[in-house]
Image (cartoon, rainbow, N blue to C red; front, side, top):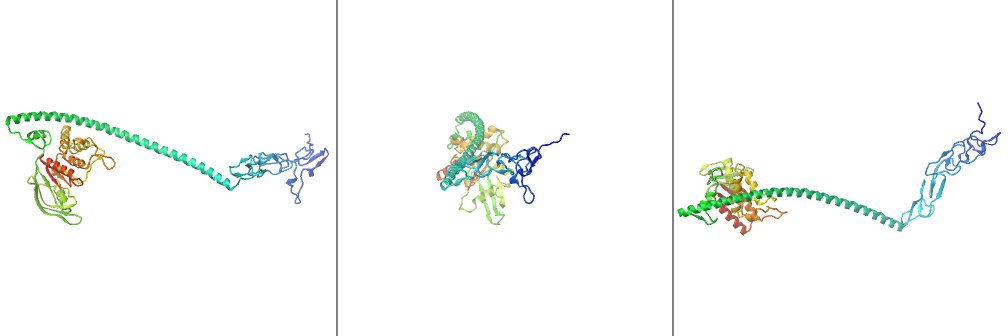
Length: 443
C-alpha cells in the first residue's frame, strides 16, 4: 500500500522536507488556538493563505460557506451578520448603503426611505424630521381612510343587496295575495249578478201581486216592498232569524277580585225590532250591564234571572251565545284585508255550515245596510298604511257581527271616538238594523 506523503493538515510545506505549523495558526497562553490567526491549511498546502472570502474557517483545515445575510471577508474564522449601514448581496461582498436608503443589520438589499425621512449614506435606520413625521402621518391616515371607505362601501352594498332580496320576497307575497283577492272579487261579482237577477224576478212578481191585491206596503227607508224584503230572507235550507226578547229580573253583578257590587237588583225588558240605548254617566255600569246580559262578565259573579222570549236561560249557554253578536269598543280587524275580504272570511269562519251563496248573501246585505258599497274593496289600514276612515271602520266592526246572522246585537261604545256626523250615521245604521228583526242594544 502506497503511503500518502502530502503535507499534513494544519501545516504548510514550502519545501518537501520541512513543515511550518506556525504559519497556519498560533496558540494562546492557555494552549487554545487563536482564531484570529487561523489560515487555511488543508492537506497538501505549500503556502499558508487566509480563509477564502464567502467562507469561514473555524480550524485551519476546514472551510464552510457563509449563509445569506452574513458577511465573510477573506480570513473569516466565525461568520457574522452583515453590519448596519451596509448590505451584503452575497456573503463575500459588503456595500455601503446609498443616500436615500437605509440598511439594518443582516440586510441583503437597501430599503428606500419613506417620504419625509432623512437617510444619508450609510444609514442604518430612517431619521424622521418633524415635517417628515407629519407627511408620514398624513400618508398613513390617507391609506386608512381609503381602506375604511372601501369597507363601508362594501358593507353598504351588502345591506342594499339584503334589502333587495327582502323586497323581492315581500313582492312575491303581495302578488300571491293579489291573485287570491282577484279570485274572491270574481266570485263576489258572480254572486252579485245572481242576487240582482233574483231580486229583479222577486220584485216583478211582488209588484204584480201587490197590484192585484191593492195592499202593497212600501218601505220608505229602502225603497222596496216590505213583503219583497221578507221574500228575500232565506227560505228552506237557509238560516232563519227568530225574534228575541230579553228580560232580566233582580240582576246583580259582584266583582270576584274586590267583592264590589257593580249591578244591584236591576230589572227590565229589551224588546225586539227596536234600538235600545243604555245611557248614564261614566262609571255608572253601562258596560257591566251589557256584558252581564251578553254572558261576557267573566270577571264577576252574576245573580238574578235572565229570560229569552219569556223562558229562563243561561247567558253562557251555547244556544244563547249563538243568537248574539257583540261589537267591542275597539276596532279589531286585520289592516291588510279589504272590507269585503274581512266580512267574507268572518262569515266563512262563523257560519261554516251554510252554503257559500248564503254566506255571500249575508255579506252583501251587511255591506248594503252599512253603506259600505263605495269602500268594500279598500283595505282597512292602520297607523302605517292609509285605509278607510274611523267611522267606516266602526261600521265594518258592526258588519263583522252582522254576517254571523245574530238575533241580538250588542254594541259597546258604538260612537266612541267619532265626530257628530259619523256618530249620527252609526246610530241610523243601528236603527235600520233593528228593523231587520234584530234586538240591538248599545251603551
